[in-house]
Image 1 (cartoon, rainbow, N blue to C red):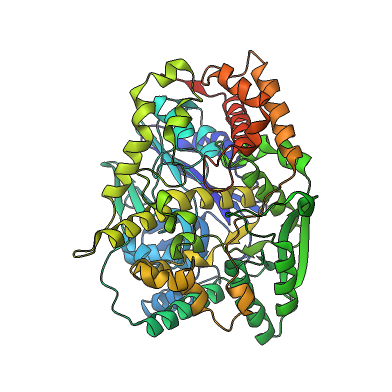
Image 2: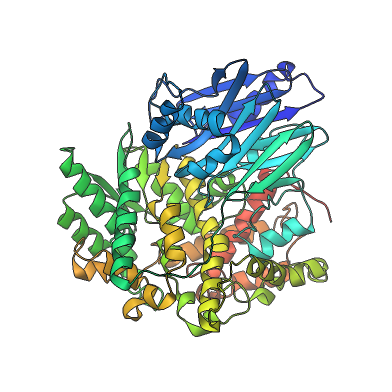
Length: 615
């Protein structure tokens, strides 16, 4: 993977702005530790940081190619999984290639087909192409938003970057936040509304969209969305197609010129990916597949089964690794470090995040990178196939709000009296929820129950999943680790989207259809193991650590957090041992300790970015 950034300015001579571009590029060093490049002409400055995965020599960026009198320049973050097919098509159109990189294939795809090229791509990507002859910039983002891309317009300029920090590094962009941005942080965070950049004047290019910027202005277009239509395949055919699509997605994503591994939790999703990868390795006569899992000091001592986490991962990891013959590595994390890198994780994410759910992946990625540069992860199967509790627990299913954040009124109580009075905060979550429902592609004739399940699936794919993809991208790329997500293959997502819920919920089990489709790939007890979410520490010392950190912040009158929260209420919260058992306020894993950690991250984010609050 890589980091991209740059800007277009119709008034300035950017050949005199190399230092500014270098500052923007430098913010992305961790995303691309292997190489750096810049392209500057009169009105365009484009930068790139590279993580070498395919063709280290031939894939240097920004990449420049000529066609006739036209010059094209690309900066690209991502991976194409149909590079070979595209290359064949382009060669048939008369193109030749000087490298084996997917970057050159992507650039020539745009040169041949223009904006329509994005419909042909299978992969994860965020890229920008400068057409010098037309004096125009084209930007695009993959269908499901695996790779990030932000932009900002100001006067006659357009700025863009893989991360917010790249845009904020430009002196023309101020780190300001309005009431709406604060509502993103406190009323829907750590989720984020698609397209919202939180900072004033910064936007996100939404998944499945592309944009064009030229002297006539800036336009944004949607090139992909979920389309609802009747599912006409019988059950056996459905199982076969799901299995074939999934296997093909995994195999395509095993291509790498650098060390590759899989993340293995012993659950269905990661075990299935590992099974296909391990078999592929054996068929190609390759060395033992490396797998990685995460565990926490003293977890076996403090773990208690509950409806969200029915059992520990460790025994299942051992079973699957032994069954598949992988070279397994268990990464053991300790609680003090989980609490100690909350600020670093916020810096990596550019925003407050998922507390220890983020820091654990941050530390996990650091250790994986010591042995691998690419990893395959089971993320997103639950969104695609319906694995979360809100798909089958009636009280969550019928909640008239985001089911992973069911009590927005409680969030209001965290805020300062001044902010609580604002209608923006009172209505924000509800408005964003209703806004999401208007986007759902309806299927005529669908009954109320089926229509509601379609809504919940859409919410999960477009409002919940991006939060986890953000986390996955930022925490891994903080160490130059590329994590791929086969369950986000758009062909699989498109197909499963229209499978009726009663088939997805086969045997009245979460992801029952997927389990049945993968019969024979894994032992039955692994295949039908109850879902257990991403492993976290159950050590009470995490609660103690974040409580003490938050108390220090609350006693610091210079903390920028204090003007935004009800300090008396939060201070009382830190004094209560009951805070350890506070119900989850975001998803399944974020309770009282994570609320404290989130506040720590908000404080760190405000300080790190010198954020100015503009109400």
